[in-house]
Length: 484
Ligand code: FAD
Ligand code: 2HG
Ligand code: ZN
Image (cartoon, rainbow, N blue to C red; front, side, top):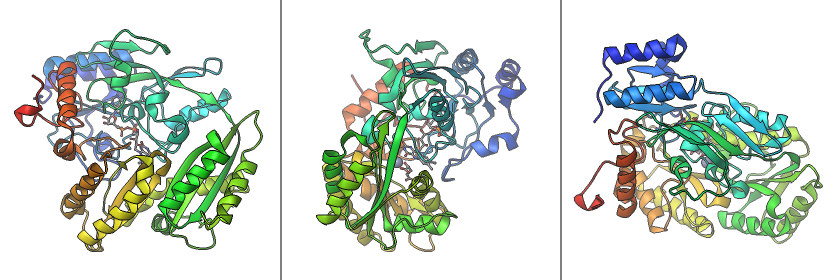
């Protein structure tokens, strides 16, 4: 159990961090005490904004001695309430946003060393400036930070080719719960000195250490890209198209995003300046991006040939290949605005599911009507990363439901959906993490061996439970959950 911070601790932190690094002003704190979707809100005694790893280490050491909780935060775009403190006001918000330096970037080694507070879009720009790119992107790229992306093992829309953050992190610098600095930044390809602490910190949601910097993998810059918007009949057909593209276009296919007509309608309704890419409505749509490096010819011919064959064989019903970069960006804007449009449209029970890729179409077409029949008035909007076997299976509240709906009937919806995905051998969180939103569900459905190991690791690395309490690791349950 943690303590509220004493006034002497707050004074000491204020003195060390200075006015840029320490605030208790409610107006400064307010924007950071609610999550992006405004589902969770909390309180904090102060916000600490260190400018260096040494300052992070000092803060953590002082808080460890005083048993005061710290909630690490980057861009505050978590979809799981992961960066929002509880309502007690005892915790300190630890913002890494001032640590926003790219320490080094090299086209020769294909590595960037970025501090935790570097915003993803800024890393994209920096990589572009040296003729390289960082191959992970998502709709929140203008706010999400490297520390948050590492700590959630973020996915996004290029996982198909480059994997999640886990595969792109070559090294990590972090501060452990007693204030010691772990310098694991060296991007060693081979290193068998024992447990892989770098990978343990990826996806740890700030519960095992504070990430202060990461060495990240870069890849060659894009020479040309071809972006197509496709209308088709069903998720099954979409998966068939993926197989076809795999054969015909191969590795060049970096993104394969599934969008139902209902999600497209939401975007057209709520996001100014968006237009439907195809003249007719289709039950489902797919956004495909194929990319070629500088030296290779454009992927457009291969993509257009493959889509032509898919049209002839009836796998797809219509398609348009963007004729310009502006049109490609417009297609992507639709895809990237779905969360924003859905947020504007009202409450939803949000789910982030994965099953084996080949199982997903069937799961979607069976689970959606089952949910809508069991909870009359709800509507499923399932979209996203079909090629990764991961969709956001969001369930819209019945008309007229208030903002509290996700806590009431929405919680029953969530249990129903999660039971279905567990029965299908899948995961209740593919990319957004557990945070506070899925903690009870992880406790309910998690494999006891996994839960026991997670608790043991947490206990060993953060014995006083000061790092992001109430997130990711369910509290001890029945005695059999404990490791002997
Ligand atoms: P925050 O929200 O601030 O924090 C996230 C978690 O990491 C919290 O648990 C926090 O305590 C911890 N944390 C933050 N910084 C540190 C640090 N330095 N050290 C230790 N712990 C830390 N996610 C995807 O995976 N794929 C998507 O396609 C995707 N699309 C999105 C689209 C939109 C419009 C939005 C709003 C979100 C989307 N997300 C997506 C979710 C979110 O952007 C990611 O989870 C992202 O990684 C969070 O980064 P952040 O800097 O905002 O972290
Ligand atoms: C995406 O893929 C994000 O767009 C957000 O992961 C999904 O809002 C959501 O449910
Ligand atoms: Zn996603």
